[in-house]
Image (tube, rainbow, N blue to C red):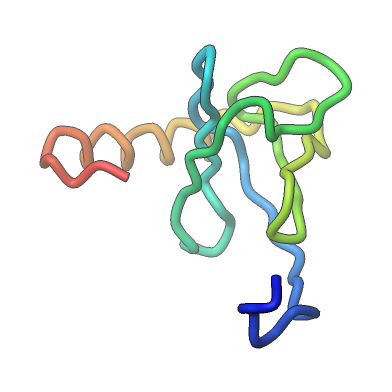
Length: 91
């Protein structure tokens, strides 16, 4: 932590879960900010997480904040991920 120049620069981000595996979670960030692939053990949630759920975080551990599934966003994000995988430009 002594190596950080801006220790108190946390910002709030939101996104949706677009992929779940036994060991990882991929989060598509709002505002075309990209995607995060994290170890699933870092995701904080009350129930079993699902694709399409919203998460919010302060650049620490993401947390599921909405149980509702956004099907349009999920489809769009999945299509983008599939295109990147097909082109070889994987996260």
